[in-house]
Image 1 (cartoon, rainbow over the protein chains, first blue to last red):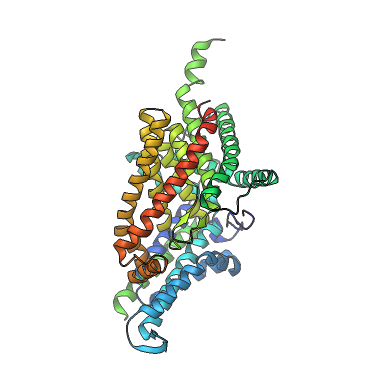
Image 2: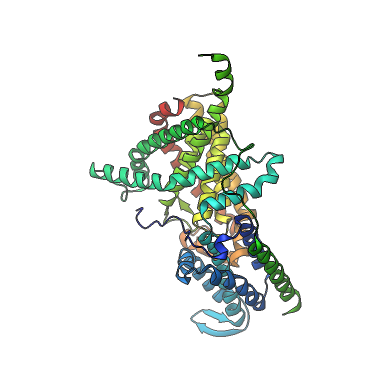
Length: 267
Length: 208
């Protein structure tokens, strides 16, 4: 069950995109996603494709990985395309039985498929070129201004870092305990729903116990090293904006202006 | 040992418990995310409703460390899910976070008033009902229209998808009533049952 789960998309590298400040990458990704919803015609997509192709080329990441990111949403894309293709009203182009494909339907289907592909490609690029730890770091820094209204930015980032570190450990442990219980005759993959839920108990109890033990050990280790929260903490890796980051901002501003222009002046 | 200075500075009990809570919530969040990966869709329901047991660690966390700890576990789980498996541009994660948090917070709040088994069961029941009610509103007014906006699927099409599974579904309201409400109820009940079965066996280590 857990074998085909592929955790972590990050591909290490030394490209300008990898070296960018995670804060900048997160902000630019958000701007990019918002822009995708501003777009209302295909000219806009032409501009946003520049937006995505340039970092992909610069990052030297194989296109294969980007396609891999698209695979989980293939079904959603398919459903979207089919619904829009057959259920949009307009000038009929082709008829299959009681269904009809309209000109508007084809346009809408292509439009929505492109939106989804652009959306997922952009966010995938962020996770492909930024390690989860850098992402967490970036999120913490971006949340810093909200500390004043009570957002526990540092604690949240610390918990995220710990959680990230424990994913592989817990995955391995889950698999190990599953196998151990299966060797004793436990069955996780058949039976009706209630039975399946019941069968989870012998798996979850040892997992919980070991998870808590690990948490306690970690707390003790942190205490022993005098961990005392985020205040006055110094960092080995300082986040610093470089020329690439400023260039990326300028580039984004230019493309945003282009996209907004296509929305209002092309039809 | 000169206990005056040592105990006031390095053995700060409150801080110690904070770090303990921090690591426990973090590990539970990670655990919850791992469980979330073992999800399976139910044949009777629409494809976008998936069942998983990932709320169990959040519930246990809420019982052991208070309602906000449970919410934090849900938050970590969903951020991890967003970082590793972005599939619906955060809409799915937000919905999941709200669903889980409402249930977990209610149950944890009840239990924090009075720590008995009966109150725990009552809290979970209240949490499940509240969650089903609030989430049907949230789905009707926010999430379904949002999906519609994102994917441009006409709402009739989602309703038709529901009709294929259940004849009584004729419009969006009945879709919510016949598919999302029972799904959330079932999910809540199953998660609560597992938590009940687990709690007594896990609780010694929570309080140690």
